[in-house]
Image (cartoon, rainbow, N blue to C red):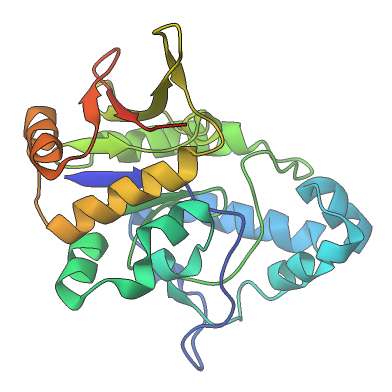
Length: 248
C-alpha cells in the first residue's frame, strides 16, 4: 500500500548537522534529470529578490524563502516526512509517531514535490520554496513533471491511496487503479458536498490513523472494512474513489 501525499508550503528549518542535498540519495532516481533542471531554474531565479518574488508569488516579508532557495544545494537535510509542516502534516502528528508507526510511514508514504517530483517519506531533503503554481522563467512545471511523475506512479506497488490536491494531480496524474480520497459533508438537503476548509486536516487525521494501525491494505475493500471497524466514516465514493465524511 502506498499513501500518496501533496507537499506543504510550510517547512521546518534545520536538519542533520553537516549534511547537504545528495540527489543520488533520493528515491525514484529516474527523476534525477528533472530534479537537476528544477534546481538550476530555482537557483537562477533566486539571484534576484524581485524576480523570485514574482516567480514564487511571494511578498517582501517572505524573502527568507528566496534565501532558502539560494542555499538549497548546501543547507542541511532531513527526511521529507519531517520537513513538511503544513496542516495535513500537523494532523498526522509525525513527531508523536512511535518507532514502529514511523517505520510504517517511511515504508508506505510517498510525497509529491514541485521541486523533486516524487519522494519517499525517508528521502533527505532541504528546506525550499516552490509550489505547483510557481512560474519559473523558461520552465513549465507541468511540462517537465507530468509524464515522469505519471510514469513513476504507475510503477508503485499495490494499492495507491491518493490524497493529493487537484493542483498536484495536474502535475502528475495517478493511474486509474489509484483510489482518490475526497473529504465530504452531508448538506441539509441531503446532498454530499466536497469540503475545502477542513480538507487537509481531515486527510492528515486519516493518514495518521492508517499509519498508527500499521496495516498494509491490499484492496480498497480491506481499507473500508478496517475504517468501519475503527469508527472512521470512510465510504465508497464516485469513480472508484472513497469519501471521508466529516461534520461541518
